[in-house]
Length: 175
Image 1 (cartoon, rainbow, N blue to C red):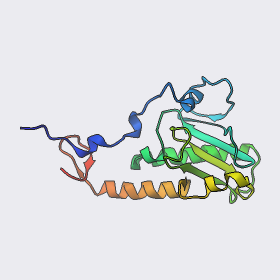
Image 2: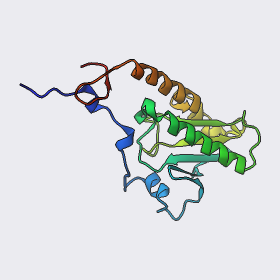
Image 3: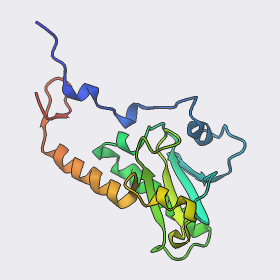
Image 4: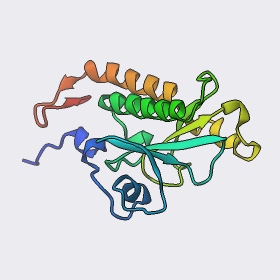
């Protein structure tokens, strides 16, 4: 009899990504890039200036763990998205940004990413975004924090309704 394979074995799990030694963002997060000034850091993530800023304040928040992109995130990753956004807002506050209605926090969707490591763009003031960068941060390939959280919350509600697989003990659509 053939071995039964669980469909969830093929899903990408962001918690298993670890560290990619060839990834520039992994090197930055690990403190191995002497050219990047870390503006904020905790045990889970770091924040630094974007090398190609699209607004007067343009920072990136990245997890220390290598996660490919926002499409790699699962429903249980809602917390990391919120913590990344909180760090971005804290850096803006530390840089005397006052108008939090005029900011944009968001992620590019593959294949529209230049570095394949999850990163949150923190842009302020968004009303002063540079003309050349307007399209990069206003089109369908840019998921705002709110849109991504909505997508993950919706995914979580669907996951909560799934049955538990007898093979892997994870929620699965088919068994």
